[in-house]
Image (cartoon, rainbow, N blue to C red; front, side, top):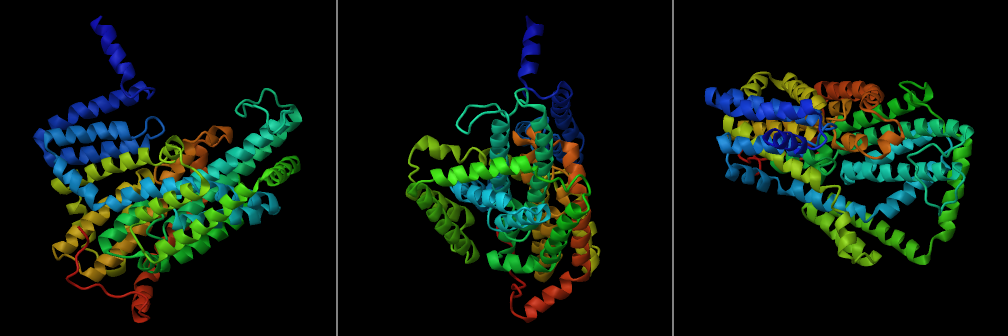
Length: 523
């Protein structure tokens, strides 16, 4: 009985995660208290590596559970305190508000975004132009919305198109029930078109995912760590946009050129064309939807368009905390589109809350890092470099870690440590501002290398669409490789050759101002 109960507990522990993964987490939980007795510093680093391991193995088990267990144990053995964790969460409350309310707010604007992407896919017959449009559209949307939200919308679009073609090719009408995950009922000629359609959609999804990174790096709301960095530095929306410009503008141009070259020369499995039979079916369906659209549906699209304008204005002029602007979007969109049922509203929060919870675990790990002084030697070493070399070292240090870990975690750790260096007088305020730019771009650009680095990439990989399109981890890494190389190198070159000079020019033009030498990062 005792043995069977132990087996049952083990089977329940972390659910369907592999046994070796469960044993690894159990080993971590046993080793950490023992190591802490020997050396708190080594135990702290062990915790960081273990947490990064849970992020890297996110496909085996969502990192919230194993990471949360490690953090709970860290509190009990004295690595940090609940009060410090609460402090870190309170300091970063705007980030949590962003994830909770902005992502939910955009959920109620999906009709508009679905409509726009649908027209884009149907009307642009050139694959190169379409790929470029998806990359650029995703970049623009991600600059004003959260990248995770944008990729969620595009996944909805792609899933919708896939299911429609699958249903019609299987001999059914639009209104029929159909399982689009099974190919048994599809005749062979249609299956050949289906494979071509899968390749086509894979291309577009990867271009769109890269687009979220290109746009997400440019503004304080594009990625969660951007908001953390902006808050620490005391930058508003416009100042953040302008300060990042010397790096983000050439990177955007290089990214778009890469999209064109990949499609033109059919490199890295890009260049797949939309089969004509598929295009005909999708165009017919789009016309069908347009004919069925009522005045109420049209009114909803108009309202959502006006809310989108308010969203851009509210963010650009920093009229309120980003999360509160997102809350206003929820109120306006639900009130004027007739969504008043509690359960309907609740669905909007399902996508963001797991990652919001994980972010609180991030902040707990940051509290451990601060209390144990783990990154202080690393930061002190990097700060021994000067000028351009120092900026490059910060860019590379953040970039390499973001490739295997999560860029939100990396960005929040580094900006916290640099803030501490400023408070202790190790760097000047101007130096802090330059390093903040290097940290933001370093976490956002090289992190496209793997799904671990970007929440939007991981969301795509773990979505129901990925198996339909045969989009595996290895395939994502392979298709992202040319973008990884280009974005990383162009960002690095812009950091070394242009960031200091461009920032001085921006000061001279009074587009940005020097912050007071005594002005410290926000607490």
